[in-house]
Length: 443
Image 1: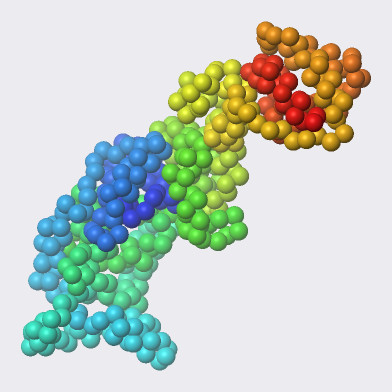
Image 2 (image 1 turned 120 degrees about the vertical axis):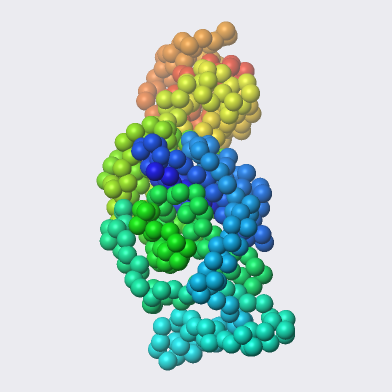
């Protein structure tokens, strides 16, 4: 088995891409296969080296390692050679229409209630007409002559699939500037690198039918390749997730404090009947089964991802996060706050509470109580028993119990009405900081 993940370095990796990459990786690892990372970087206008670096970094962060890597920009000679073979066999033909002319043709066919597919007018071009066009400075784009036969395969996720190639326009494989397009380069690479399984999104189903035809035209056996198309992700309202990819890039999620075990565990089970659980990619691979994926669109629910992230954070030891916490953070601090975090970056807010300067809200009607609370603060040094000593003294002095006793203290000391246990935060805060906040909240 050999699979590939083939992103274009034109932007950041988002969760839809990551799900496809993860599915390929898990399938290969489960069956002892190879995983190829291929950068489809022939679009020189949109490709950026920083995006290529970001893709590699994000994949490593998610726990995905590759056995081999290649860039399509290093293989232009291979595509040129394959194109010449298709030209020689009559399957790749030159076209001189401009985009405007093609648009007029499409509109005319639509008005006539005909399928808006290319009419193959350029197949009737004579050598003299081609010579004349080129003499006038025109450069052709090159279309692949589809066979017209139905392309059929047994999809590993969607089941039996058929693409009627007679209802599809002959695809452009080479632009007028000589740049090969993905539809073509992908087939050449899959053949020459020995790809056995192509796992990608459901939006590629028609493209798969076309590429099966190109494979056969290049002398390969399409039946040697298995295809699997994962239904696309949608948001919680059923809309296209692509509208929100900026907020769901792996870089953004990582920056917010999402842990890789949470994201991998969620994406691997998304669209299946299995409950997601936070695990590393290699742990998930031990039982990964592509046949468990539903044929229906999968809803990406940020709340479920956060729930998994909480589970990860609540179990992480200090040494696993110390490099991502404020430099002076301690084990005691991490153990105090981790049970209240959805995202790791929230820890910085709690560090400001225990070690920084916050301005608590003015708590109306509680001035006398807060002054009493300040006056009854135990003397330093403070240990883990300081909370119990202070609360016992406050109860005796005020007769308060429950919410009336604790809520004003929490608001004054942390600025929040909920959060980590005050008994754990108070020793980290220190007497002077606690006294000053009680004074400000009572003022």
